[in-house]
Length: 141
Image (cartoon, rainbow, N blue to C red; front, top):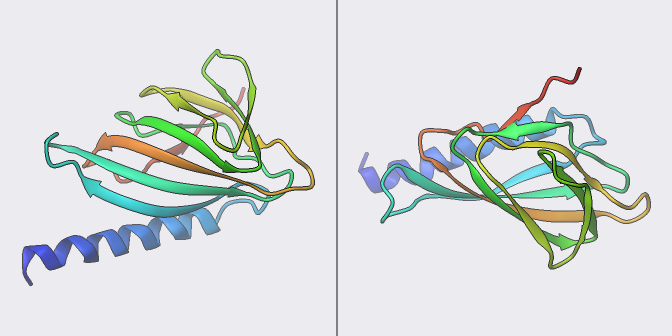
């Protein structure tokens, strides 16, 4: 098999794994859909990854952190999303607004701010290419 045939196959397999992880979550959490993964040609060892997070009305993600190397920018596509990163204040972002998360950040609040309308965000990661798992739960005290 040629090398340029392996990359799409690897991405498809990774997408299936990530999607199956999302399906195993509590239905009141966000649904994560992989959208894009590609090595950054001029930054060896780094990849650009995007995922879409859909929140049903009232849905929330559990507190979590991301891959150790991940720098993230999240942008709300529709609805309103409440977010709290590290010791910063909780903030409600509306469509067109966003925030960033430095590597190692704890995302203690990530939820739909509405009990009646859905919300969607796009998360854009710059991460080490070797890191394929993007999200890890944070143990609560």
